Length: 416
Image 1 (tube, one colour):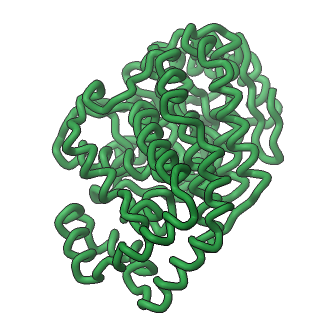
Image 2: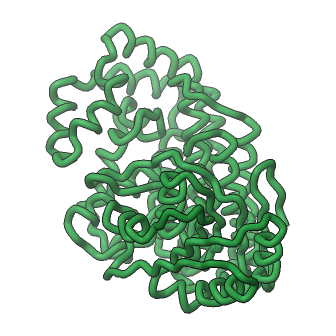
Image 3: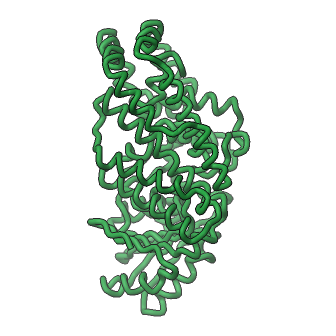
């Protein structure tokens, strides 16, 4: 059991009795259970029956569709079945179901309990819901769950691809923590050193036990689930996604939107993040190889991007959502030449610290080995995404957020 100031987390061999007792102690008797056609028979039905047997009024929504996506269509499937009763929502599933439920419960002014069926993402305890709204992947601030009840045998029996996805999401904390430090140093982004340390440590625990996680042993899956929960708590306590999302997630977000726009088969979020973490780590490796003098030469040789050309590029790449992306990039687009030169000088002055940040990221070969231990993909073609589209995402995904990541730094150095 993990206790947080606002969330109780149970990871046990049989959490249903604990869930029943939790609800009874708080006199919770009306529920809105959200699952899909896979998670309902795996665990949703057992939860429904257990709460019904103790007198609970359980209204169940089973999401239907070829692929459940956290967008308007599936959110509406939940909301259209909501009634006027004050019901506690139960999210029985992994990341997508949790985020749909998080949003629906928040907007109907009630609370929710997370009942994960796979250790596939780090969002169970976070405050944000990554949704695809109007074709744009964006994180909507909602609420964390009241509690998390994770049934260990169910998690161990999850598809290996979903376990590997959770590991990939955790691997990304190495580069996201580095990007967060970089953004604080160079772009004055809000930062919390203790939360950053916790985020890196949660990743290390998972990579230290990669073989056990790959074998889906109870100990290995507990290590993974503990890491995912801790990462979510870091985001919750900070009040944003910065502790757990950097260049690697931005590339993934670009690809996820492209998949939606082109009506392609979905690819697990963490599977993409595992590969994009290798990409981000590669840029940190290149930065580690530069001396301060070489960095200065590169900065001098790379001109400030032209504002009109930048806007044209955004419009070309992100046509359906270009105005929103341009708005996110306004602080960069509107930099004066003097401000840009000052940023260059700051990079030069802070180069020793930048090198320390880069050194905190494990090498891409080591990360590749860890991904192999859990049976995760190590390149995009394995996931059905072309080299061309991945390259396009790497070059343009930095536009999606007002963040200074290794992508922005590499661009200024003429590396990206």
